[in-house]
Each structure stands twice: as C-alpha cells, then as structure tokens.
Length: 215
Image (tube, rainbow, N blue to C red):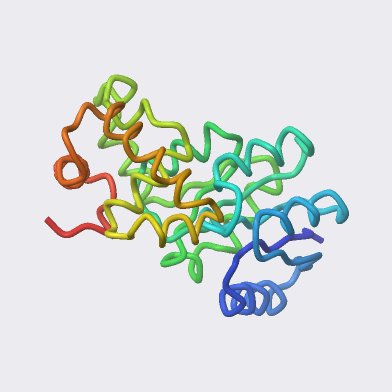
C-alpha cells in the first residue's frame, strides 16, 4: 500500500485527487494540507511514502518548501503537481529534491503511474516535459539572466509577467507589499533589464511562461 499525502490549496483539486487514488487499488490518502504551514505540519506528523505537492500555495515558495521537507525527511518522495508546464520550473523542482513533475492537465492520465514509479525509487517526468528538457539541452542555461534569480524572485518575476499587481503578489505569497516592492528592482537588476515591460518581453522571447503569456 502506497501512503500518499495531498498538499494543494484548492479543495476541489484535493477532492479530485483523493477520488482518483481511492478508486484505484494499492493507494491510501494518509493526510491533506492546504498551505505551506499545514504541509510542513502534516509531513512531520504523518508517515507516508509520497507527498503530492502543488508548486504554488499560500506561504512558503514551493521550491523552498521542497528543500525544507527533504532536509527534514529525506526518505519522503515528492511529486510536484502544477499548472506550470515550463521546463524551468521542472528543473528547479528536481534540483531542490523532487522525484517527479506532473502538470495538472495530464494528472488524470498519468497520476497513478507517476506515484507508483517514484514510490519505488524512480523519477517521473511526462513525455511532453522530457521533450522540453531535450530541446533545451543545448542552451547555456546557467548563463541566462533568469537563472540568476532566487526561487522567490523567480516566483515574483512570473507573477509580474502574468500581470499581477504588487498588492496581488503580496497577498498570494503572504508577504508585505513593501517586501514585494523590494524584490522587483532586484529582479530588474539581476535580469539586466530597464523596466517591467522589458521583463515581459524577455519572458516572451525566451518562452519562459508559455501557458501564461501570449506574445
């Protein structure tokens, strides 16, 4: 029996995942969480094989959360479930300690196989994501400006590109507007761009957030 923890801030998503797992044999939903704080508490209090973790939840940045969880519980396997199909997010998640990366769009088809594979010690990435990785192997990724951003800065960068205001970003990340306002000039400086419009043009040119940005 594979014991699974669900961490997603949307109750509807958790309900759907729970039904998929309970309708299949060999899986047990051992607990649920809805933000970074409850996820940490759940991982500390409930033994499980796999944590199904949403990349974007209220509180701590998803990549930072992976690192903390793996530091405290190295044996727990983490499967990221996210709306973001971009290879940059997947690369950061694997580097932080995730064992699998699955988009919510493909979850209904691949979820059980993904959980089973990482629970047995393997690594899971969808075919579509593997193709994205292959297409970008020849890029000098570490030399690209967006690779200089911290995980928090990259998250704020994405939200700026998506058109969120500083107030909306602060609310979603449980930060003060002042803190987000401090991140913005740091991002512009690290990206070597002149302003917010240039950040957006950079994201479009390099196809960083294909699902969220239309050229």
